[in-house]
Length: 336
Image 1 (cartoon, rainbow, N blue to C red):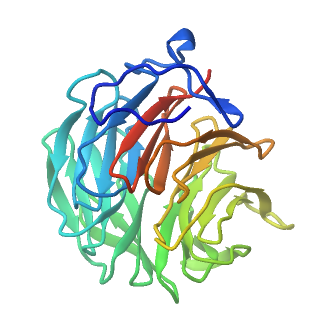
Image 2: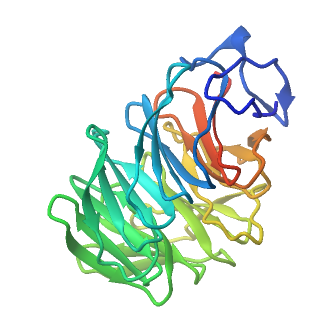
């Protein structure tokens, strides 16, 4: 079924229809508390590059080429957008929530990382030690975050003090960065087509993942910490084994179907909360979702009128959010 709905915040129920091995549920077999099986959130004035649910699943944040961050209520039909966080001077490329959902951390092409207090609706910290576009931001333990930049560094920050706690320097621009599940490693990836795992204790590279043939645009650690998912401009989405003491190849599986085009957007990738499904941004205007155990594509959902830049899984329900270069964000139920 197409995800297309009239351009309004109020959702409506659509008819059942199968789509390439998957369905979006309707009022007949509802699987979530959404006001409707498919909902459209509109309001951004330019391409939306990132969207993330908060830890409770009650709220969502989105970042856009229009330099703003929108905060949304996930449940309810009216007034879904309850705040706009303005202050970045250039594109918002990535964001994440802190663990209690009180703050949003953003990465911007204005060379800064922003820390935003959701309750008061304003920026409380500006982390500005990068000298290039900040492409990626990820959450670590406590008040630590990591950012990856075109200045060829990944920086670990303590957002309470605004201090750079650690810096990892690569030879080329870093397009994605994240912590390992146990916070002992930092993963970085960029235009050299490699993923590097840095040991935070001695700040050295402990292993390198090779297999992509073009820039890596997105990266996500699995909920159990055993696997890393990477999306690349070579149109490959790869699962890697990042457990300690792996002596054989760390390549686990490749998922097929996601596309990249000449726009060269930093298309992200993500895991479902139970680790059983993965998704990735795709330039073909389609939301792709795969089954991790089998590698098969479960859902192939058209509807966006531009590149799908990120797909986020709800933390508690079978719901996804997708954001695109068409300025739109869709929420949709998956079959229970």
